[in-house]
Image 1 (cartoon, rainbow, N blue to C red):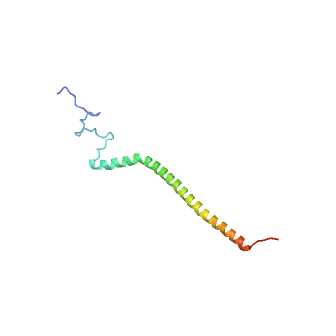
Image 2: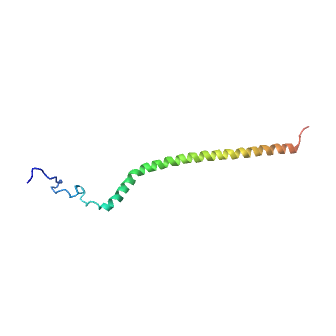
Image 3: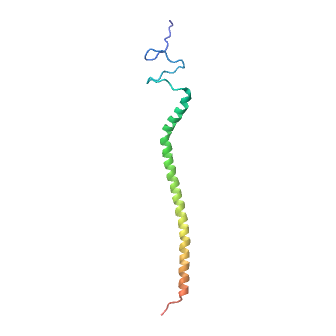
Length: 101
């Protein structure tokens, strides 16, 4: 027997050969090829609220920009229509001639 105690688990079992403790819930550890998928899923779950928040902000920003551009375009086209109506109104008044007593 040596003077150095070997680490043991709470049940008195020796730790696994890879230096990791066995799963606390009694399940066997996942296979190494399943871990990248698990990590990806956990990362997605962790990042999803941030992605959703960013998505909402970007949609709002795009909506505001689109609304502004639509308003500018409509204003420009309405100005052209208003000028055309004013020109037509003057032409009609000229064709009707002077209305006097």
